[in-house]
Length: 286
Image (cartoon, rainbow, N blue to C red; front, side, top):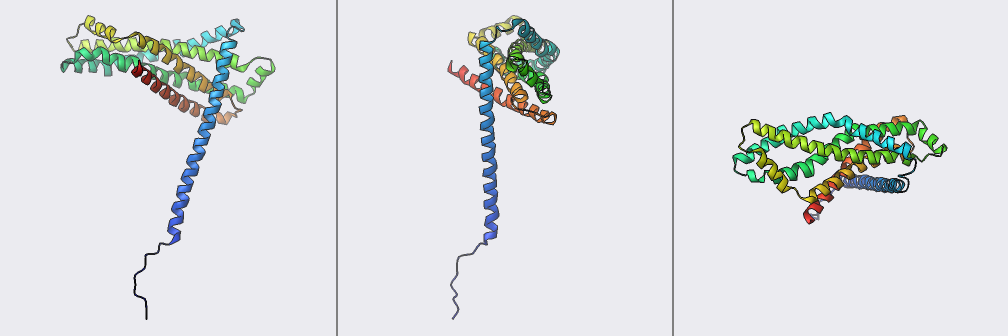
């Protein structure tokens, strides 16, 4: 007599194993990525500590050699970028700030103009946009320059001559980029605010210049000046340290330089965003 009772459906094991292998492969890939990220972060932090130690202990060593290099970096990362930063400031002022001022005036919220300009332009957009421009124009070039020098053995030649590569190559870039990002941010903010009001004035917005600048002055606090200085200097130092690390920390071949440049740009952007988030928290706590 046949057993007619129903049994539980049997799923073939061949359909389960591929899914298990896929999940295992995903976790293996994610684990390797996390471990690689932690190793690179550890190496980058060690390089940053070494660069900071050299900056503190050897800043006055060979000033006739180092100070001209710092001025050269300021000219390269600051003065030469003034036209581009001025263009971006005008574009931001004409496209965003002018329309924002006009819209707030139309809806009767013109008293919020100063607070909005300080919060959006001075605290966030000014430092971030300036940092992106410096990173694209100077940071990437720094990785290519140092990576090519490392691939050709020029860094080892400096060490053979008794010259500290960190003191000679990294320190001027740290100070030069810190000063350049700070100065360019101030220039960018001034151009953006002035061009923004000019666009609003051309639209016949009933907002006198005295009222516009009075609102800006009343919205600014001393913490804004202190935070802006610290933030922009931190952004410049981050760009210098990350780009110098990618170009100098490990032996490179010529064909490895493009990948090192990409890693430097991505790591710098991530680090600057994290630092900016920390400053936002500091603004909220003050």
